[in-house]
Length: 475
Image (cartoon, rainbow, N blue to C red; front, side):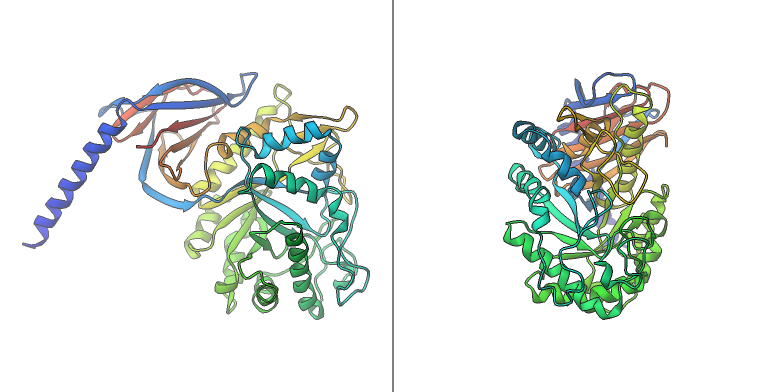
């Protein structure tokens, strides 16, 4: 005890000195604000800056920020290069294509940097296709020629605009002849005799794209492995996913020189993300073979399921690989609903340890397509009019921008608390020390809360039904 007390006193003194220093650095700091609200005609608008002032008294209407509490690393934001997106993109003139690429990927746009594409066809495209001829067990006919028409050119333009763009790929179904049901749709499962063939298929896909100058961060084992769909689908249990990853996919990727290509499991809804991760990770060798856990948003909130998955497997990144943003035009009926849903999902995914957020289709046409093998048209942040050959930015394009434009790769989520559960908050610190705070007011009431940092506060206007991004310069 005699030795403990002096050390404790020294520690307290050090913290007091540090706190005093941070207080001095925070006082007078200018905070930039970018705002959107249901009652305004424009989104992501720069507002008048606010400034921090000393404040040891305020207790109510506070949003607390704690940079000393640091959580997961942020990998990025993106959307999917589906065939539907690429076909719509190809309809635009070269000038409009370049304009749209800059809006999505450029430094003056919203800076997407973590995107998805598909192995073989997915539901959002012109029709079903694979890369090999029927029954070609040796994969001698493997070719990505179809994707040279639209997907490849679009990805290349995006990578030119943002060389830091990371990609991952997901399959919807193996070729029908590899499956028990002999069709690409309606679920079915991969026949075990084709396990090595399907792993080689992945390696050939990565090889073909590499020859085009396109590398991939990773792959997922299967898109929505629990779903029997009217479009391309294939069923895997959690155990089967892991066993295939351990015994076939990982060794094959290593053999073909893709030892750095990462493998993700699940790639389906959050309501079972913890159980599926637990099932897969119980397979011997899974810890080494599986890098991350992918999830979608279609079955409800279930944010606690993400947190529990993280608690079980804290070294496995959680990646939101398919969040279908709405396509409502600003000012039309219920356009704010799509913004609020996306922003709430993104904030709560981050607050429950997700490291990246990827929406679904990047671009769809005015009918929500092209799409096949299903009746439901889709939604996207950018809408192309196939008659006029022009595009429109929908409300969720700007909602994405509230996050992706400001939160850099390598940022860390930091501690925060909000005065009202209906006012959602997520906070981050960028690699250069800049603090980014995103605030969503889901209520019908306007407030004037305060951001509180290091015993200083800055008061800002928070309209009803609004989304704001606040930027605090490095301390």
